[in-house]
Structures are given as C-alpha cells and as structure tokens.
Amino acid sequence: MSMTTIAIASEFSQYPAGRYRVDGAFSGEVFRDDLLEPRLLKYDVVEVDLDGSMGYGSSFLEEAFGGLVRLKKFTKETLHKKLKFHYKEDPYVIDEIWQYIDAAHA
Image (tube, rainbow, N blue to C red; front, side, top):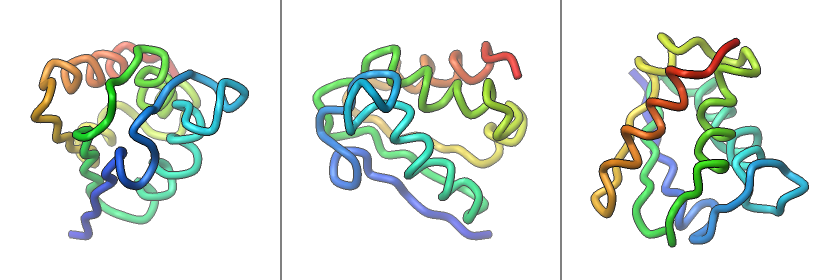
C-alpha cells in the first residue's frame, strides 16, 4: 500500500484561505486541484497534516475536501478509505472536514 503525506503549512501555505482560484494562490480550489487530487490519484492513502497553519476557513475546507465529491472526482466511500488527517492544534477541524465530505452531493 502506497502512502504519502501533504504538510499544508510547508508544502502549500501557512495562510490557506478562500474558496476559488480567483480568491488567491492559496485557495481551497488550488489546494484540491494542484496538490490533493494528484496525490489521491497516485497513492492509496494520503495523510493531510493540518498543523502549522494560521487556521482554516470553512470555504477553504469545503472546497478542498467537499469539492472532491461535488465535482465527482471521488466518492465519499473512496475518500473514507484514502484520506487520513492529522491536526494536533484543533482536532475538531478534522470532524468538520468529514462533515463537508459526507454532506457533499455529486
């Protein structure tokens, strides 16, 4: 089983914000399309390390993770198998991400 980790603060930004690409270089859409989706396609398991950032807005999280289901890139079931999260600073955010994934409609 192949596995990789995406450390958002060091590989993407300490200041992730916004929903769409037009909102800035560190939006949820940019993270999803340019970093997360390619890794999900390449590896069996992707651990997303959320530590080290200055926080996550709901628009960033919903677009980055819920958008995977909404845009029919992955099923909820597949994401539950392929995605793992690490966030010592605020474990509630992990629950929030799963809520966005599970509430998304393809």
